[in-house]
Image 1 (cartoon, helix red, strand yellow):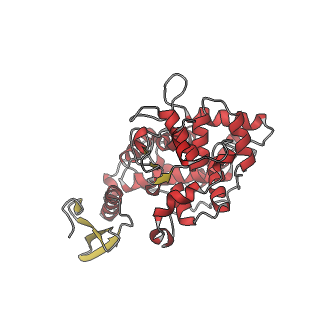
Image 2 (cartoon, rainbow, N blue to C red):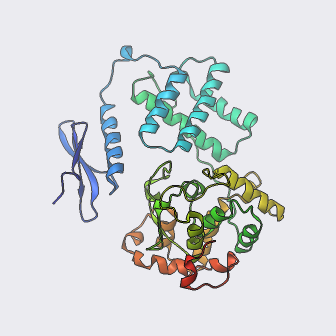
Image 3 (cartoon, one colour):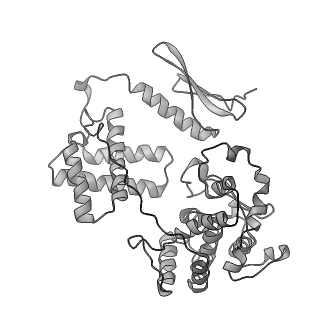
Length: 382
């Protein structure tokens, strides 16, 4: 029997509750006098609420407002309202900054170069000229331009849905998704050499990135509350400034003995607060970690930098995944550890009780330069 906490209503019109064995949230609502039922595709209540509100807004858009009642919103106000909307959706500060920066650049171009007063004035040809401007003046890669183009289209779609512009002239514009350049994964030898060379201040977090596959932002915002030493597990969930990239990014990562020693050494006796801090006791800057990683790799004669299709700190995430595959780790576990959404039933049926075992099988002791270890050494600091 479903509890009152599990069943809720959105907008007074949409009733949401978990259904089936898996407890996937489903929305029941009326559309044109007929009952409709739609799966929200998640078992997480918070995410179900967001998706239910999006459904509600979509249904409300079908109520057409007379064009005479719509006033054109200016560029600055449009950016502010859209970013506020994303903030209410729980998007991370990094994402909000990226969206604000790109929309401001685009709308400044439309104001100064195309003499426009509102986002609703942007035509497909103006949009094409802006995309060419990004290539010629900012020398951006095709995939970056694709992502920035989608941001602009999403903003205009939002403004139109809120009746803040009369028309969205980019609605029918299709932006082709280019093929991404394949960036390298660091090899075991490269990781071992970098760990021996990298600045001591960032060595602990670089080790954790190498042997957990975490994203840099996740590791920089890792809290002691995330670390469960009794179960040898990192439990990632939103806390403080840590905002996970996707719903699947909320996950458990078993601790390899190397990682356990690093975390114990970094936390000491602390049970709360950030795990990694700089020499001044302040939160470690992710940019600093990437810069020092690249400096170490460059000093060893390795190709570095995204523009050179070389190593960046993100190459450690690729290294982790490659090492797991080479060691025979089951794919459902690798996907869970990395926070990748599993697109099949394997991840649902696979026995995750084997997670710690498969992590312990990975050859990270030799790469970290620590040699074989026994279970009793797991409590030593890095």
